[in-house]
Image (cartoon, rainbow, N blue to C red; front, top):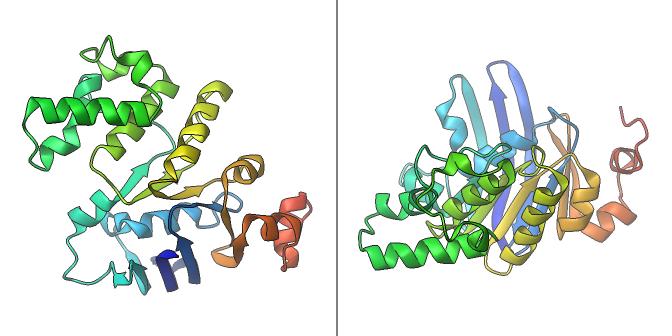
Length: 251
């Protein structure tokens, strides 16, 4: 079942076109991995889903994106509510300058939840979901900056989950982590797809093969092909996809 549908999406920064007429479907409760070389437009596509590109100057966007059949680019769409539905996990963790507990409770508080017992439940539930609870439950009042980089990334994931998103957008979320921490994040994302739709950007093909249910390959702003992981990795239709996956020249 389709959760997000992209139709003829075109994005330009000034005179430079970054995405060229992209058409893509993102299925419900699956991990969709967007692969492609650095600078090909993967992160730009991700930012279109929660309308973060609008924060930049000189950006032109045409085409449309639908979530559950409703366009996200309508003037009637509450952008704050949209971004609540589309949680973002960045390449590097950016914990807030406050305690571990307050990082996770921050979003719910902003959205009006004030009761301590409810906040306690939210914090515990989402630290467990991110695989961090057992490591931090005895030091929730400690500053988030006291955590390792890998733990900070899982804390940022817990903070994202605490506002009950429908979609988790992941922009190279393990690239700055050691192998153990990266594995933890991968295992957590695999578990979370039971409840969330996940879109993950990476140029690491091994990671894509491990995590993906569905794959899209972008090259020089074009979506070359997309489909089931097995088809893309074992029997791609396009020569450029085949060359990229095999490590050959694809120019």
